[in-house]
Amino acid sequence: MLYAKDETGRLILAQEAHKDGHYRCPGCAQTLILRQGITKRSHFAHQRQQDCRIFSEGETETHLGGKQLLLKWSQQAGFTAQLEAYLSDLKQRPDVLITRGDHQIALEFQCASLSVQKLIARSAGYQADGLDYFWFIGKNKNHPFSKQRRKLSQAVAKFLRYSDNLGFYLIFLNVGSKCFDLYYNIQQADCLPLSYMYQRVANLHELRNFMQRKLRFPFRTLNDEERSLQRRNYLRTVGRRQELANYCYLHHQTAQAANSLYVAPFYYPPIYVSDSCWWRAHCFLERMSSEMFLQEMHCHQTPFINQNCFWKLTWQLFQTELANLQFGA
Image (cartoon, rainbow, N blue to C red; front, side, top):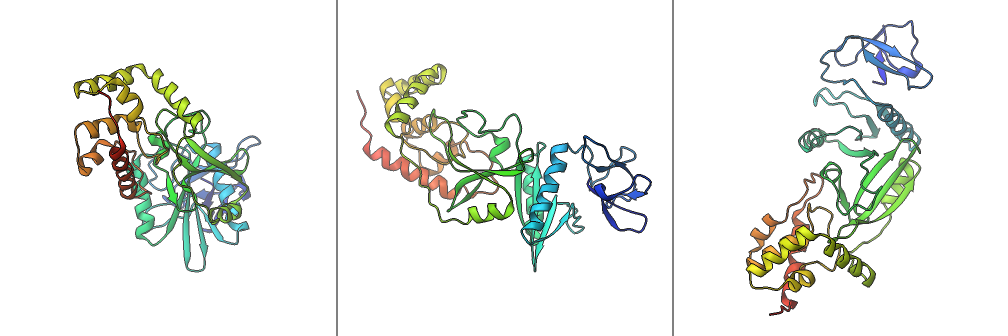
């Protein structure tokens, strides 16, 4: 943790504390150790390993640095900011709590793994208490945009947000470069890498200004080059391709139908676990209703996005295509 209470009960930052002082945890009131060094960031730790439900041990250098950046940028943007403020009603402690007038926002910087259930519970706590909140993500070796990945993992997809200005977006806090990495207009397509746009911003003020820009990003139709790459990638998926061809054969359709009719020629929301061609074929050949169709679309859990409107959009696009499908013998 980055701050503690001194002998007088005053909160003090670790970087301003002295080795000969006596400090206690603001949460459990147990004795803390001040750790200051040349290579590691100054911080407090519990003297004994114990169950403190408010302040956890084992923070990484990246997490400690990210919280200090958020504090600094919040203050520079004109907000009153508090590090690790304990909200007693919620029994929660956001990394940074910023205040401007009567408005408060909880900022969270998530580096470690976090279950969807805990993410939902902590966010619901802020919402119930009338606080706005935002989760920034830490970069790691499984960063979804570091390679030509075709889909988001659940570990990242749960942080997805959507706005009319940016489309689907994710915001990473890059502690090493001391900036935000904003990935927006994220779209996925069958058998192709994720499509997205990228913007690096230096602080919270720049981030807020960029996010307020009036932009619009419809889901794109694949161009000829993308369509060609999609076909090549599809042909490389031997096992799944054969599975789809067999499924079509059992329903009296040719493999050509599987290749050309069910692989979608457009981008769609990045909320789906698998390529659309598998459930598109299943839904059409089984003559499914819209309700059954939704059950076939395996989606990531995205607690900050209302998926219903995007399901309806996908269903409408699917119905439009069905009206134009031509099948071989």
